[in-house]
Image (cartoon, rainbow, N blue to C red; front, top):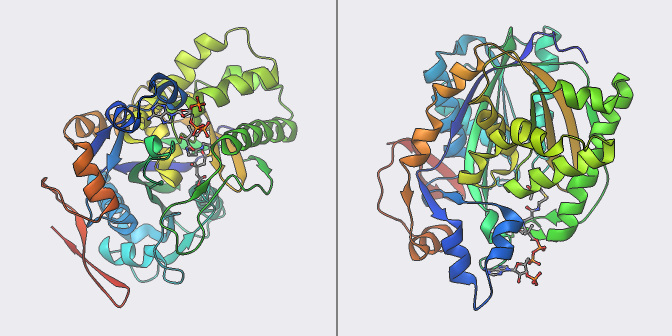
Length: 390
Ligand code: HMG
């Protein structure tokens, strides 16, 4: 591991929709006489973010990118690439990032494309952008991950929905996370989770998806330590933050304990979990699964508490499946930069929806009464979306 390489995440901005549903209330509504404690402890989710009917992955991505440029005063003349990672795209040809490129007023000489591999595509885009900046091919890049996670109404996946976007600015001498060269990978073909063309919701084998996630996470970690020739327990001990793709908090928790078992590092596992993993679960437990953006929302949550230049290890998982493990050094300014976003305040300012309101807006395309500022879908004509700012 070479934590000194100075290319990585210079700015991070999260867009979280202004409405939420309480997961306990939803589980009670669907319980039908069953005891809800089992499903609630299986997922460990508290709340899930619900977008307005006029929001989509493009509006959320544009809110994140424009917000990042505004908040961190990013120099748009230096942005030479914008990549959008999503698995809730509505177009098979046009990249969502073409709209975002216009909405964020980026220059014409910007590379624009969209990537797909379930929840892992943003990580592949980030690592590619880091390599391109490191090689001097581009000056800075924006990677934006944006998703609406929607499952079948009444399924046990319903308690793990969510929505949101995270934009990352990739640059030299980053003020959030310098990404170290080298990654670990584990990929294999599995039918754990997929969304056939035309279907609004994915086909999910919940148990298989959890097994595949754990196998892949352990596999990418052992690939990393083997390539880097580090003892697994040395690397685990060196990391102050261990951050996982978080479809629901309990999944990240289970993955951490599986990793400790796999690597024989169980002596202080409970204490390590509290210190190194739990802070990353706080924001995700109030937002839910944001697919491609999930790992980076967990990173923001972890860095709310960062005070020194810690080492962070990140696990990305994409169903189907692939997993990447990579590491980086947290910049001294990271904690201040993340806290300046006021994410905890944003979460507490959201409107709590009743279950009837949630069902109307999320499943029936209805509207709800709440204040909104940002990009919205204005019209859809012949499949083409037009956007506006309110
Ligand atoms: P499962 O074990 O398949 O769940 O997990 P289940 O349907 O068997 O339900 C578990 C128990 O809860 C059952 O009881 C239900 O009856 C009960 P049992 O029969 O065992 O006694 N139950 C309830 N009880 C009371 N009140 C209720 C209620 N509802 C259910 N209201 C899982 C499924 C929990 C994981 C579910 O949330 C799920 O399928 N989530 C989606 C998949 C997922 O997130 N997998 C995680 C790893 S894969 C990943 O992270 C990738 C992903 O982000 C996508 C990507 O990469 O693109 C998802």
